[in-house]
Image 1 (cartoon, rainbow, N blue to C red):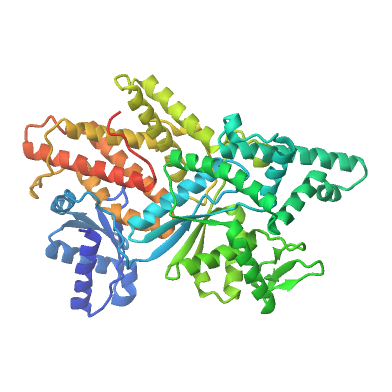
Image 2 (cartoon, rainbow, N blue to C red):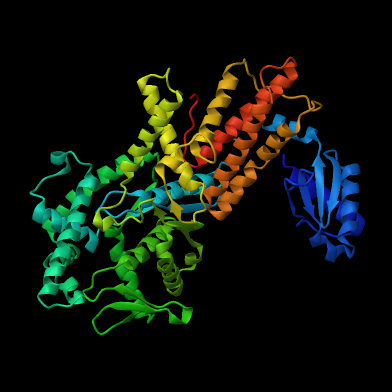
Amino acid sequence: MNINTILKAELSRFLSSKYNIDFHNIEIQLTRKDFEGDVTVLIFPLVKLIKKSPAEIGNEIGIFLVNGSKYVESYNLIQGFVNLVIDSKFYIEFLNEIIKIDDFGIQNPTIVDPFYLVEYSSPNTNKPLHLGHVRNILLGYSISKILEASGKNVNKTQIINDRGIHICKSIIAWVKYGKNTSPKDTGDKGDLFVGKYYVLFDKIYKEEISELIKNGQSKIEAEKNAPIFLEAQNLLIKWEAGDKKVIELWRKMNSWVYAGFDKTYSDLGVNFDSYYYESKTYLLGKEIIQKGLDDDIFFKKDDGSVWIDLSEEGLDEKILLRSDGTSVYMTQDLGTAYLRYKDYPKMNGVIYTVGNEQDYHFKVLFKILNKLGFDWSNQLHHLSYGMVDLPSGKMKSREGTVVDADELISEMKKNASLLLNELGKVDEFSDEEKNNLNRIIGLGALKYFILKVDPKKRILFDPKESIDFNGNTGPFIQYTYARIQSLINKEDFSKSLTDINLKINNKEKNILKLLTQYPLAIKNSADNLSPALIANYTYELVKSFNSYYQSTSILKVDDNHIKSFRLSLSYKVGLVIKSSMLLLGIDVPNKM
């Protein structure tokens, strides 16, 4: 039951009967807060069709709706806008309609609905997941849930960058300095263990470069000739040649990393439906590149490296294969894209969740696939997002100055525990209940702080600032949900219907108005690939409810019809809060 849909149908009939105009693109939006009204009809698009002034058309529409629609109570005209006051009966009918619909606003997809792959995380197996990965993972997972809620089938996927020179760097460092130890020996998580050797490689590499420069080499020469780097290059060549010992070592170290990743994913509450591996797609990429050479789409330089010239498309030359025949990121991305299409030929698109530092890369990738004649390349979309900074500055993984995802999760739980204890909210909780609440509040704060920001914007993330029970934060929303559950549990609540003639106040009407917008919020969020739209919708709903809760008695009223209505309203707000937060991957507690 949507007032916009109802009014559009009534206005279309009006235009058809009075002016013989078949026009259905009538624009209706919520009335701005500083004007009287609930919804506003935009008049300007009709001026050219009807050949009358906005004031004349607006008055005709207002009079027609007041006299002919059972839901329009009154109207007022502001320039080219007709502000309509909607009768409370509509909102009570709406509440009665949705009170027993637990998944209100959610369009569960069927087998015939569109199908999308959403790629996120896609880490390298040479270091642990860090704060930058966290934004990627939370964005991708949330977009997957939002697309599903908008009626689309989704496959949550990732491409694991499990080979290449960067992987060989951590392997070489472990071979030279690891003394054959394993994560089991040191007690480290596998990804953290391997990541230490990636950092160690960079330290040794820089020392060797400095020494070569002292001995007369240029910086560029020294970077190419550093012994540890040459060893890593040689290891990559052996790997691509299928050297059994190298492959065995590579598999062992990757297995350590995968175990570490799985633990972090579990702690973050995310999962995947499919996995792709660069080690299995780069060869397919090489085959595609050979076809491009045969078709004169690509070209070889004198050193044997393979390139494409996209200067006519406003881009540049892009390398596809190195001179020694080893692959680059573009090689495997071509192979992965093609393999996904072969696996899911009926897919409607792939959404790559990747930071904006790779904007150029994806422009080139999509353009290359198009030039190769793959029509489905038009269905590929890059969900570009801004980087995450800390108050201390930008993270640098090679120097070991990143905030590991595991450290961040632990800190968020700790901060939640400190605040909850300080506020006395867990005095009567068992240790198990405290630990669970610390997890829910800590992770909720982290996820909400990141997802409430438009993906395109850069984030300055302060863990302590994110955990606050006031303002636009996850804990504020979670606390409101728990408050509602406490209300419901104090009464013998049943999902009874409300008398449509019941008089409701403006705050109740405003809450109901926001509830009617939930399906639209999901649609807009899915269309724009922005969880921020869901986050900020939820915040507006919670602000409105808290203002209502502070000023209106819900339980201490003599009229049982009013009490029943207010409980029903509170109950439905709680369900929408829970539903919307789950779209962000956030749990809500039943008590605090």
